[in-house]
Image (tube, rainbow, N blue to C red; front, side):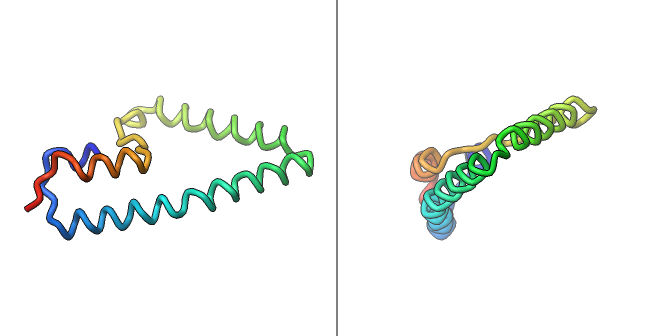
Length: 95
């Protein structure tokens, strides 16, 4: 959302962003349900330790990448859907 600070959004662009945010909100529930189902299957099959090892390796690789020259460049952070809805409606020109 930082990329939109100070920019004027037309009504059309505001509406398109709102459609996208509504769609993201709609997708959150099934994604969370699927995540829970996958977690339950991993646990039931006894793969919890293997998943933890794989997760640790991925985290370590990300850390190594960020320590390389140019790898630690600032990036836009994640933003929750609620914050996005609040941002799109405030402090933005309605022209």
